[in-house]
Structures are given as C-alpha cells and as structure tokens.
Image (cartoon, rainbow, N blue to C red; front, side, top):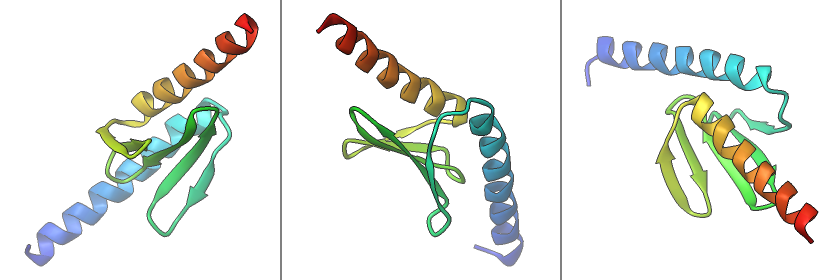
Length: 90
C-alpha cells in the first residue's frame, strides 16, 4: 500500500467514525466506548453487541456482520424490543 493510499484509508476511517458517532448519539442508547480498537459496546439482554466505528461491522455472539451505524442501532433496538416483549409475556 502506498503512502497516499494509507492516508486515504486513514481519512476514510476517521470520516466513518465521526459520521457513525453522530448517528449513534442521536438515539440515546447507552454504550461503552473503546478507543483502542475504535469500537463501542452495547450491553443487551442477549449479550454484548460490538460495533466497529471505522470499519462498519457488528460483532455479536461470535459472528461478524457488515453494518453501518443505522444498521447497528436497528439491530440493538430489535434485541431491546424482543427482551421487553419476553418480559411482558412472562
């Protein structure tokens, strides 16, 4: 990879992180942030969901899925809704 390609990749990752954080912060879902690997963790009733801000990927239960911030929010909200329905049905 050339120096110019590396700079472009780093800029793209930085842009992804900023855009993704703006989307996630709008939804007010609690999370923990890890700067070492540029990820955030949503703690859910179905386990932790990790969203990688710079590469647009979700990891949950040992599987990795391509996803942007909107997909990650939908995924986490579906888990939250599922757990609320399960509690109401108990």
